[in-house]
Image (cartoon, rainbow, N blue to C red; front, side, top):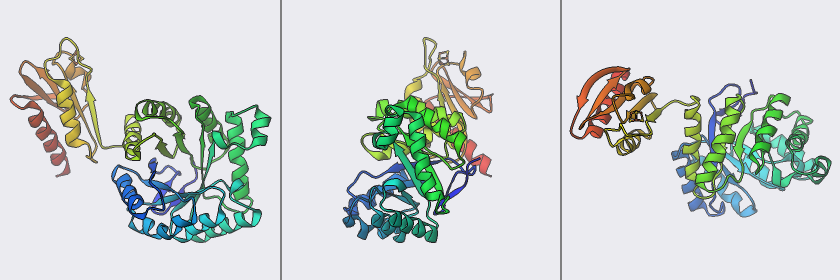
Length: 349
Ligand code: SF4
């Protein structure tokens, strides 16, 4: 098990629930836009939100960002120890820096002392695009070994100063290299790992790449916190991250099973499934619901569902806990949604 690291109220690693992150893409110097986007990202399901802090003009807003945010914020900083110290002193719950390029020895010392005093963890984020020249030369380009070597170099800088509240990420534009790097790192140290595919692309392709990469690692038991990185609206990222976790049984809530439909289909499965999903999108209680097109294979294929609807001629057959209950006619989707709600409410009593 990885080491537990605290980011404000959020625990990363140590067997804690796998958290989901995203990052703002507004100009951090624009207080109104960034504050609004931070709120929106937490609403979209984030457990932690990262914010770039890239110049002095960002600093006056940092305290307000963290005070107004419903969860922990992490400051993403490159090459400037003063900004890192400012973020911690203004209450940010975490830093994402690479200690090897944050400044001189004394500046690293200052950042580490400040993090120790405030109990603020540091994520070391190695990215294939910014690997050190000597590592690139030694490995003949970007390799998983080189990325791990780079991360460990940064880790040692912190460990030398007695600092161990560390999270590590190793992101490459190549999916296989990224997965390989995380697998190697997981064998070499016990620090929690922030898993994600960088520059995954636009939502369509990017979701697939992220699901494959993050999913492969999570199936190996690797990953304590995840980020799906997409080009575009960051509010799309957390829902996808949560879907990946749900698909692997690593997060509860509402889960929809729907058959692919075929010649036997007797219900507008796609339309009903869409209405059911819309109705329970934000449901936090655990429930698996199935919408199946026919009563021939539907009941068997939906056996694992708590509540299932299987299409008959002008009707839907309702199953609860695998048992047939009743025939739904008229607005089948609406009646089915009402039955699912009833099952959830009865459980709560
Ligand atoms: Fe076809 Fe029925 Fe299977 Fe749906 S559940 S794919 S309608 S056989």
